[in-house]
Length: 395
Length: 133
Image (cartoon, rainbow over all chains, first blue to last red; front, side, top):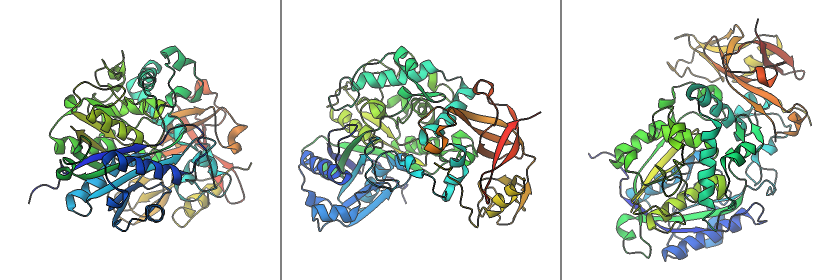
């Protein structure tokens, strides 16, 4: 029996998105459908061709809503990824798995999010806006009870503590954080769809207010609205469709610690956590290494987590992610590894990482606004302090 | 706005009952001796379901920390800026809490701390820390 693999079995053949903004005043449902129809048009496929779906676990436009809007009798296989932004690339692993197994032929993957800070539309944790503001003063159930009473209430505070530990162990610096923010903003400046397009300097980064030490405002992702969708089909069928296929060369998922639970996040050595384990499986399946990657799209919720992801995925040795980003290390076109060439979640939009996935497809197609020359291989990774996943796309 | 407080459940009621008595107790595996936190039914090391609630020395060091400067929940806004720490206790478990009466500039990794108990409601006592010795 051959090794289980999704290697080269599926390809992304359609991409679609809405406009991104801080307060669009639109429903997540409406934005999802706009992005989905755009992805179908891009692929030259009918929404009625979709027979499988993968959504984020926190997605509010569920299968019932999709069926009601698309009236699609073919919808038959559906799944959701786990762990919010940790699942940003896992959704593609699930789609490719369904294709490889023959369980679906045209899989829709999507994420719609009214995550602008003024975009809440209900009391639920996932009804737009800042999820953590809903904690209110109701009795805490689940694992929130171990940190919220001490004032650790939101992801940026949890990440601040993880980032602080990385500074303690590795000497990561404010200048290195700024390098990430400045590089990604320079990419956004070229991208007409990006929400934040004004270039920034390292001094601008240092002058932005401290949010939760060591994170400044410009270390944090945006709070925005928008939706993104893409279509996955078999590699064989992809060749006959309208767009140049972005083949899913390899993909992997790995359970691991979680940033919210620092008590278990630090229970194991970093190399045994989710992202490094996903990385080892990914490189083995792809039969390529970090040096072969032309562009990477990391889950850039906070600048230091990009530095840690470079270490997790083997682009830099443990503790050397900081030096890796220096002197424009992540900047297009001349950096040692151009990353998040759309501007990422730091400067394009925060669509739970999925806007970065679409950017990786554009790079493979050759249509990015910060196009890497002769781009053949793109890495996409989900949030690296969650149970997570990653994929490699190829031309 | 009032402080959000835990609702004890079957898995962790012993922890909160101990805290009310001024004791920091963690689950300790009967089979292999490992301490664990947060509470859970099995030992992640040896999978034994046998455990006791053992008292911690309450001593440890700051493993990592942040100074929250806002935004935060309304219940914590009057305390801004405030610290949050991950304490590595001598028993080997990590515990998220705060160091009381510690100015931001004096908080650092490796700082020795000891547990103190802060009454938050009739049912809930929170385990905080202060600088040791």
